[in-house]
Length: 350
Image (cartoon, rainbow, N blue to C red; front, side, top):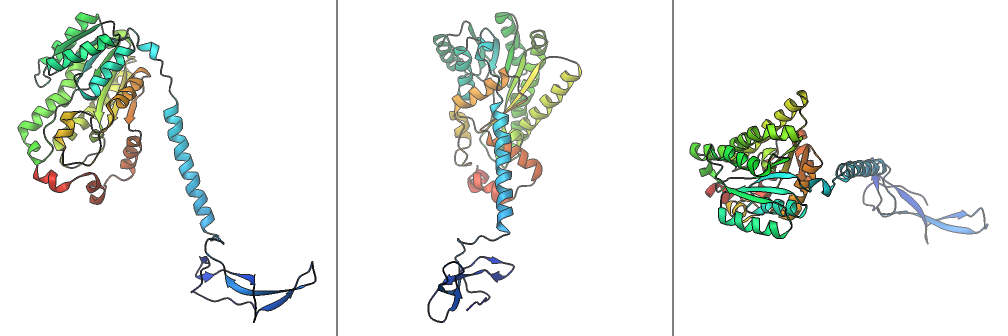
């Protein structure tokens, strides 16, 4: 006996109706003659589990999802696989590196030393710089010099660049990596703290670039700017710091276009990194964010590869690139997403 009913079955539902199938049964079933064996088979109507019969409308949807994910995966694979990095190109390169005493900056110095570059390192703390210089010499750097400087001073950037030009005779790479920050929280939004942060995290970058640009133009060199995800995606409780990082993105994006129009062969690589892997950065956001710091050696290597290949942008971890793209499509994230990475109570109390 064939029958069809609504609801209560385990079949796949399409348009509100259950799909049914004939199955061999017992008493009360309908006898059907088999055309091949001329035997009688007993069949009756029973619902097939949902896992056995797929919904016809689910097929195209699943196919579209697979194609979309495959396309996105192929796009990112092609983007990051296209890498013509030649380590030998950095042998003998003249590099001025700021913020070289700890974290990503320290790892950058060590990578450049292994690759045979000539280095001028600068940071705020002289004792830490001396340690990094000693390690660079052990790693094989042909020339390593250092100068301690406080980028909060408007006079420091010009003296640092002049020192590098005197010691190296010119520059092939200017790697801007130094940062200055105050503990995250509402107290960081005072005018005095904002001025200090803008001087260290933005204005000093502009001063260093302006002074070094003529030498980089002569050598057809590269500007490598180590920025932050906070310069692309604003977040809570980091207002002045995020403002400085957004200013970097705007300044160097505009400068890149100016150089292109003037046919000046100087590459600008903007590097978007996550939380810095250093003690001061971790201490500044302790209890405020749940985001983990990016590993210093891997992040530093990504920066070096991007600068050497004259890439326009570097994102580490790579998912930050996707996050920046999504922000253009979804410019107003909901508060729920923000709270996933923030301890809002601790941040507000800071």
